[in-house]
Length: 244
Image (cartoon, rainbow, N blue to C red):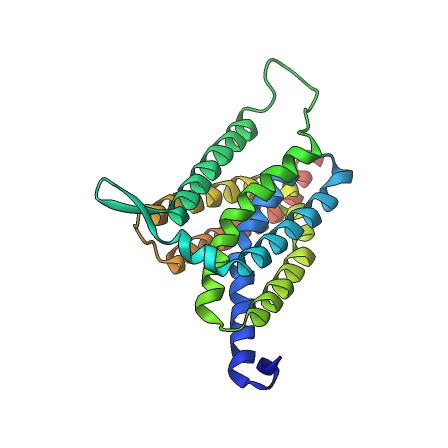
């Protein structure tokens, strides 16, 4: 507990907590998309369990630092690119995100086929399993960032717990907002496609600066917020025209 009296440790804790929250945004988006397929009564429970998995996975990986460092060792070379265990996880996670996002987009755009009115919900445990699977990918990136920023494992664990706590508080509001606005859901799915491509690129040693990705996502959200506000302003006018 010597880090408590160290100013550098507190600076590292603050910085790492903020970074963990930023890195967790894509995780919240993914969880919101998956949870939206469940009945309304199960969604909050799935969000909490999903983020609980994220916290547990990150802490577990932190306690396995030696194993994480081995993951970065080269396993084989393909097309002149050295591939490590970490790269395989990133590529697999990126492909999973691309496939899942594409299927969700197709279902959102096509809707139910042949006039089917019954909405088929996936099982609760299948959604939790998918969240747990992708949490491993997101957690790996988060843990590597934590290892690079802080020296004390206690500082890293506290930062992760605080960040996940903040995400748990925000996940419900974000999920409801995504559910209420179909265009936001489509935008969120496009973000997941972008993140999937970035993960695959990272896995083949093509580094895309995270700042560019977050700027593109932030700019797109601002534009969509303006569009939502414009649509809300037009609704009263359209209702008045109908009444006339």
